[in-house]
Image (cartoon, rainbow, N blue to C red; front, side, top):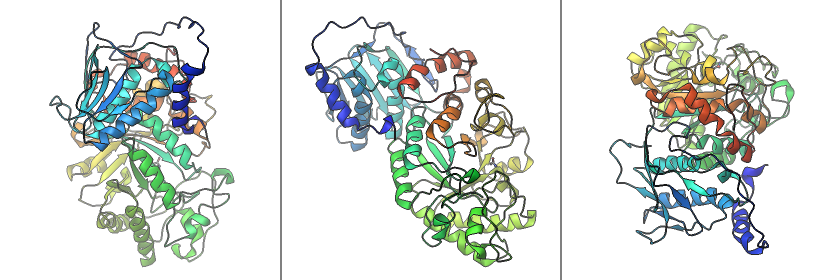
Length: 531
Ligand code: ACM
C-alpha cells in the first residue's frame, strides 16, 4: 500500500534526527506561501473573527497540551502530533497537564461557547498559543482538522520543510448544520481492501464527514463474512465476482471490525448495508434455497439492475435475513443498519410491503435503527426509520408522507451527490445515467429545498454515494471523490448563509497543494482556480 501506511513513527524519529545529521548549509530562501486566513477552510466555518495582530507560529518549543485525565483528548493530541511532526520536524510532545510555560496547542474538553453543541468546537489563536475547546472528543477532533487546514499546505509533506508554520490569529466558533454528513463506498461491484477503505476514511475525516456507509452486497458480490451462511463469501465473494469478472474479495469480520475501529478513531461511524429484497443475485446464485423455485441462477457480473428478488413468501428467507442482521448488528457499534430496498423491480409492490414490514422490525430487534433507500417509505411502517433520497427529481409523495410519520431523510440526489457520475463526457471513469456532475453542480444545491415538502427539520443530513461499477483502485475512488466530496461535506456542515460558489472554488483551489503532497489523485476541474 501507499504513503498513508508509511510507518509514521519511524518517519517522525527520522524527522527529529534529520537536523542533527544534515550538514549546516545555509537554508535556501523559502518560496513565499500565500498567507492563510481563518476562513480558508472546507467546510466553511460557521463564524470566524480574524485578528491580524495575533498569529501563532509553531516552533521547536511548541507543546501539545490536553485536558488532564482525558484519554480521549490525549489520543487526539497524539493524532495531531503525528500529523504535524513529519513536515515541521518538531518534537511536539503531548502533555496531559493543567499548564505549561511553553507556547502550546491546547486541546481542552469543556468551557465552550454555548453554540458549540455535540460536534462543534471553538478555536482561539493568539501569539502565545492555540486553544481548541469542545464538549466532546468528536468536536475536538473536528477542531484539529480545521487547524491542519489553517497551516501552510506544506504541513502535509512527509519530510521536514523549511516553512514558517504560522496559524492566523483570531477566533472560530464552528458547529455543523446537520448531524449526519456521510459518504458511501460500494464494495460489491468491485471489492476494495481494508487499506483502501481506511485510506478513504482518512481523507473523509479531513472534511468533517462523520458516517461511512458501506454497500456490502449486491447482485455481483457478497462482501461480508456471515458465519451461519459461510458460502456467501467463499462463493458469493469468491473469484470472478466483480463487474466484468474482475477480482474476488470480502471483509472477514475481523477486517470489518478493523475498519470500524480505524473509522471510530477519526470520529466516523460505519453503517453496513445489506441490499434487499432486490440486488440479491450473489446470495441467490450461491444458495439455491433462497430462490422460490429452488434453482440457483447463474452468477452475474454485468451492471444490469432490478432482476433479482428474494422469495417473499418463504420462511427460509426470513431466517436468512435475521441471521444476517443479527451477525452484522453484533459487530456494528454504530446506531444504523441499512437494508437497501432500492430498485426491487422483480418484487411485486404487495410483496415488497410484506417483506419490509417483516424486516424493518428485525433491525430494531437487534438494537439498530433501520435506514434504507427512499423506496422503503412505500412500505407502510410508522417507526423512526431513515430514508435516503436518491432520486433525480424534486418531488416524492411517499417520502413526504413518511416524514409526517417521523421518518428522517438523508439527501443523496443522484444528479447532485452521486460521486460515480462522470464530470463531463470525457471522464474516463464513472457512469452518466443521472447526468454529468461538474464541481459547481455538486455544490450548487440546498439539501433543505431540493425536494418539495422536505425541509430542514425533516433532514438528518447529506451523503455522497460512490458506486464502483467502473472503479477498481484507490486512485479511481479518489478521482471521482475529489473535488466533489468536499462540496457535499460543506453542504452538510456549513450554515446556508455561507453558501457561495466563488468562495468555495477559491478555497477548493487552495486544497490542491495539500492533495498533491498526500498523493490524492484528484480531477483538476477547469471550474476551479487550482494553486
Ligand atoms: C441506487 O442508486 N440504486 C440507490
